[in-house]
Length: 197
Image (cartoon, rainbow, N blue to C red; front, side, top):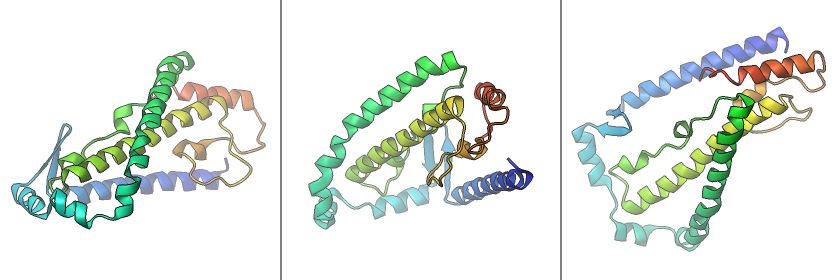
């Protein structure tokens, strides 16, 4: 990787840190505090949220019919999602210790907190919980796969790839065969350490 690319990547990492800080500052202006897993709003915000909640029957009447019709298809996906969760977790638990790769913490990716929003009715909370699980699972699985790719084949593609994981930018350039075995071993050793977030 040349110096210009390294500098740009360092600048991107710095901007991402600044963005995380700005988002956190904005969230703290939303009048809530995080205590462990519990999110606590100021009492005035709680009261305003309760007033904004749509009751179930009103929600049912005003909801788009196509959402109700496709509901069984969407929620039937819970079974493959749970099977996927079990499989990738089992893979990580059994193989990562053998490879010396630090495990991905599931709770960093699968977070359930939208059910604490009082302006959502119980159906909306159910929808949110399902989406939190599905999208969190995809992030969790993507990180497990990213660490696996970094362990076995940390090489960029020749073609442009959309939606690459954060580790991909550090991979070796396509066709760069110089000291490949030594560099691969360095990647593998690095996976045993906790990388900065």
